[in-house]
Image (cartoon, rainbow, N blue to C red; front, side, top):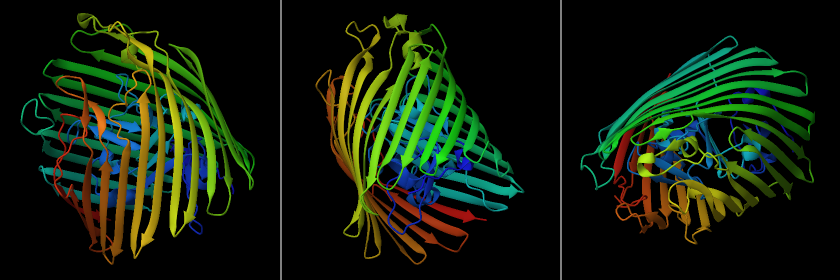
Length: 602
């Protein structure tokens, strides 16, 4: 095998890893979990990559709907479109996944990870998911893994564009315009979209009217290649979303900006300087008053790749991050607003015919809790051209959020704890990837022990690092073709426990299965996808005691028709059998839906 590095794809720090490729298939090159570009066969981590064609073919209405079939990914939406949606990657907490847009970390100071429900699919060119710890490269939050959303297209033509119009049930509509082109050594792109829907009634406890959703989004990207050794790129994306819920409305304005200067200092040494910023403003007007917040993350990074030989690569760098939160609500008193973090990391990758080895180490110096070190090691071997196995061990951490550190609620006799320590994890994983019986198989077996989880302490007046959890899991995927039909299946099995209470973790089903069957027949393409999920523990919305949410299964039908090279139609019928089910106790989900879209390329 051969490691591949190239500074041009470091722009934006697109993060991914991949399973072994099928024999005779072209090798995919991706910017890996190690913050360098690698061939997929050299990366030892579980990954799923979704390209633009797959996003369009899915006709999904939101990010959670698109990613529901990915192994290890479980979502809990508290209602319809625009509802707050939690992601539990491999059973970890909803803020244990590092979420990025074009390499910009989407971290809010109020606790939840980036608002996945508001990120518009129309802007997304590619999604890369890494499952497993990545703090040894990226720092805080990557206990469950990393989700990187890429909006920048690969611009290859002098000028091109696209238009999409969609109409659907619940009075839904979507309009999208994309333009891109090149002028000499400079590439530019623009994407703008508007989506709105009357929605559904999120729950039956409040007002009985439907809860609508509206989103305006824009993304811009710029790349200039000075010469073969130096380039400059910038990306900007924003969305302005308004989402109703029973007896309230949330307005969220999010902006992400990154600029990168990349240079080859020698034939063996590439360097990148990156500046990025994430800002989110939120106004939540509910029955109990209005809550306003502004979260800001500013980051400067210095990244390097040194190729000692084709089989020995070093990646190293420094990150300086500043986080700030301004929060206001009834009964709240904020004692401080910001903190800084300096991180230094290094990765060594050795790859040869007999054994592959990857080692990474990082130290973070945080203004609040001091130094914290994380590391990972992975060893792999190719037994044949189509069979590969690897074993990995990694540590990770999640820093306390700013609201838990700094915001008191004296009116309710509840106070922040500025002495909170990071939540930490130790994870081990064994993976086998092979081809047999005309199919591609992958099995990932893992255990994740999480300590120092932050929860309410025994006095019920503050927070402390008082809980721990264990998550055992198996992910199995299958890809094959039968009689012209392409089939992909993903099974996730979890065995999890809050080891402080002895009960299951909330909202994590122990079994999930996703099956997608698709076929092209001339200008027509058809797909059927099935989603199955077992029951899970939850919280009763009235008594606040433990409850149980039943398992369910849904079927979606998708059909596309290519009118000509420029124009196509797509029809999606969701929840074909109009299944009545819940994911979060007390909150409704969609019955049968339909969306028809027309796409035009020019």
